[in-house]
Amino acid sequence: MPEARSNRVSSQRFLPAFRMLAVALCATAFLLPAAQAEKKGPATKKTATADSKRKTASVPTRETASSKRKAGADKDEKVVSGGRNVVASVRQKNGRTVVAVQRRSVVRVAEPARLSFGQLAGLHQTPDALDLKSSVALVIDQDTHEVLLSKNDHAVLPIASLTKLMTGLLISEAQLPSDELITITQDDVDTEKRSGSRLSVGTTLPRGELLHLALMSSENRAAHALGRTYPGGLETFVSVMNAKAKMLGMKDTRYVEPTGLSSRNQSSAQDLALLVNAAYSDATVRQLSTSPEYQVEVGNRVLQFNTTNRLVKNPDWDIGVQKTGYITEAGQCLVMQAKIAGRKLIMVFLDSAGKLSRIGDAERVRRWVEANHMINKAAQQHVASSNAT
Image 1 (cartoon, helix red, strand yellow):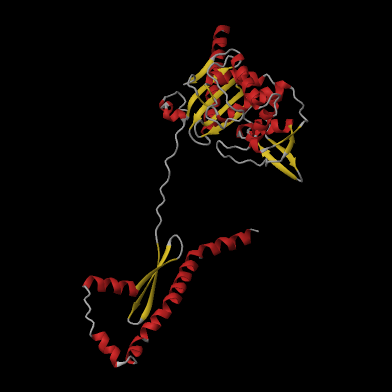
Image 2 (image 1 turned 60 degrees about the vertical axis):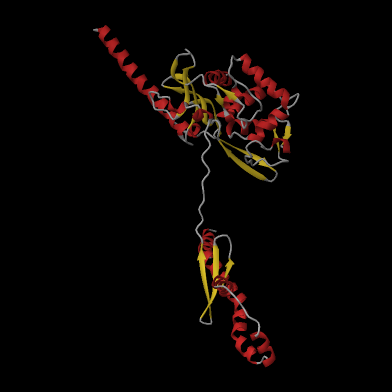
């Protein structure tokens, strides 16, 4: 297979040259009869009768120099297109057909990058001690509620697929039959962002597996199907999402659908910390959101799905619950509960610039907490030794 692929790549390199040669041949074939007819012109004129010569001579002709040049140009040169970027000019010179093939340069104008809501609000300009790439950050001790780090934590922004953490929590709390089969329908297809999915329309999976894919792989069609098949339908489910948010004290949060594809799903870091704390109390959400990989059988195929958070597979991390998210309006987002230096911490990162920057920010926080822990531990040991003496 690699060799076949190499042959295809190599043949594609010569495709422009083949195209140009084809244009030249076509142009030559098109104009050659005309050139031959032009050469025979004088012989034909000699066979004309004297009467026709006199008649022709008696008709005065008045042509300007510009019209003669125009007629000569139309007669001597033609342009043949060979595709979007290839043209051939064909002209007669000294009784010979001359074909010149040119390749036009194409100038592509890149569309300006769309800005996230945080960038539009100027939140990325806010400085912080760790030089985080996220415009919003919050780190809280889960047990003591001590705020270790905060940055624009009250800003209300789109939260993308962090929405699925609420979706998963509600489906788990509803205790609906996990083995009930649910079929993906056209209603589950993303018309908001037109994102793709390997769960094609007609795919049927148990509710438990759809929940697994929604929390672990952030599968949009799985999350939408879970909300659509909730008792009372999708509208009821969205109402329950907002009611749950209100009950948890999430004052800045609003949901309009269960996937996070809509930028109208919005929240703040303060609110999301409350959601992470509630999600951590649910054993099913903890287990499925921190699953590294999972396989599902679809017909006669086996599909492999993986976590969207690479830290889950990192042995340096002890993660209790997590969820990632991304749409253009929200930027890169990440929420987690993790145990660092013996402390259970809740971390929220919103509107991070760059695909890996949310992971980088989490790593910065972990190293910072571990460094402070070592300093505090050394200070405590020093005080203890001083008291002993």
